[in-house]
Image (cartoon, rainbow, N blue to C red; front, side, top):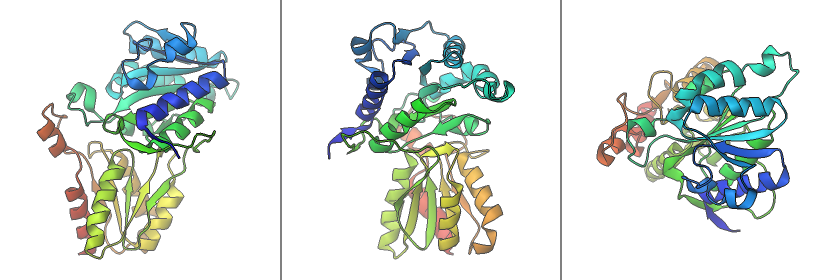
Length: 322
C-alpha cells in the first residue's frame, strides 16, 4: 500500500472530492498559490471558479461560505490557522451552527472550515494555539482532528459530503507524518474512535498529535509491565463515548491527554464523562494531561516544555497505579 505524507493525503482528498462533485469549491486567503501544501496545485487543476482567493477578512470569508452552503454548494473554507477562527466566531457560532435548527430543517449547511491547529512549528502564540475545545462546545458543529494520513483523507472526504458544518483541523506538527493511504476510494466515519493499541491496565484517550505522545508513553510503560490501551478519538464532536467507556470499564483506570489549556479542555470533558458514567468500574481517580496554562511560546525549547509530553503522561499513569 502506498505511503504518503499527511499533507499529500489531504490534497488527495480535496482533489478527489472536487472532481467527484462540481458543487465542491475551495475559498480562502491565498488558496490559489497554496500557502500550505495541502491546497497547492488545486488552482491549476480547477481554475478560478472553484479555487477562489479572498480578501483578508475571516468574518467575510466564513459568511460567504455559509451563504454558498445554504444555496446548494459545498464550500471548503480555508482560514489557514486555527486562531484565525476567532475572527469568524460570530459566523460559525451564530449562523453556521444554528441555521438548520432555526429554520426547522428546511435548509442544510454543508461546508467545511479547514485550518491548521496547535503547536509544533514554533510560530508563536498567534499561530500555535489549539482551538478545538472551543468548538466542541457548539451544538451542530462537527469537529475532526485526525492523527494519521489515512484518517485525514478519509475523514476530510466524509466532512465534505456531510450536510452539516464541519470543522476540520489538521495539526501543524503532523504535516510530514507518513502512513499508508489506500489507492482506492474509502471514507472514515465521523464520530468513530480507533483503538491504536490494546491494553488491560489503563486507558489513555488522545486525539491528533497527542496520539503519538500516548503511544510513546505506552511503549515505555510496557517495558515496566504496564499495558496501556491507547484510543485515538479522531472526532471530537461527536466523540465516541461508547468506546471510551467500554475501555475504561475494562482497565479500571483512565488518563486523558490533550493539546489544549487545562480549563475546559477536551480532556476535561472526557474525564468528566468517565467519572460520571464509569465511576463504579474505576480503580483510581481519572487523570488529565494538557498544555501548561501559559501562552504558547515562540522558542522551540519553551514550546516543547508547554506541550504535554510522554513523561507527563507516564507520571499521570503511575498516579493511577499507586
